[in-house]
Length: 303
View 1 (tube, rainbow, N blue to C red):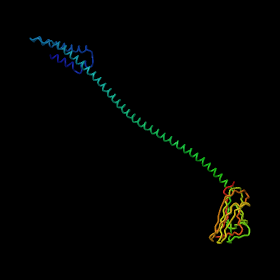
View 2 (tube, helix red, strand yellow; view 1 turned 90 degrees about the vertical axis):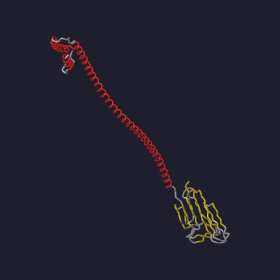
View 3 (cartoon, rainbow, N blue to C red; view 1 turned 60 degrees about the vertical axis):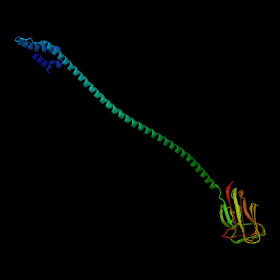
View 4 (cartoon, rainbow, N blue to C red; view 1 turned 120 degrees about the vertical axis):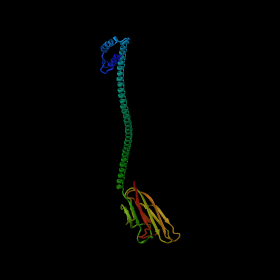
């Protein structure tokens, strides 16, 4: 029995060749060598004993089977450990890879979101730029239209300026006298308005009382007249060339001062004359500071 135990210890020793993966023949040689020694010892002991010892070889065979089984189990466990270690490493690598992938996916998602926001901002800026360009284009078109209108207006102004520069400027106004009374006369008489107030174009002659049209056109002619207190009425004529075109009369029913005025437009040819005439036995009054009796006219437009 002690030999069996010694054999078991020897087989389980770290220096045993089964732990190194050697063949079963080596283990059997080792067991047989030790078994021989133990057998010899046992034989020597049994010669002096009166009882019969159990069959040691049966136990050895059982122990050898157990050792073989244990070696196989150890090898299987080591292989399982190696496989488990490989699986753990693989899972760790996969987990690490999944973590890296997750981080990359998260980063990619964040970058995608930023890219989408940037693209939307770019699109918005492009729309704003397009709108601004459209407004600029409209403004340029509007400016072009305004410039055209301005050029046209300036052309019209220049044309009118030239026309006005070329158009004769005619206007006159004159008071009758500084001496007070004029008339009565024994015959119809041309009234000479000697006190010139305005005479643009020099078309009125204060020595004759006659206005001469310098150009063909439409003229506005007007007069005013005053008579002092008295029983007589006042009358006045406007003549175009040798024809009376307006006669004016004012009765004196209350013995007070009398006033008379009237106006008309005349289409005159260049060289036509206009003047005032006082009928027989009529009298007008005027003085310097008042201009009660006046003769006036101006060119409306040439024709």
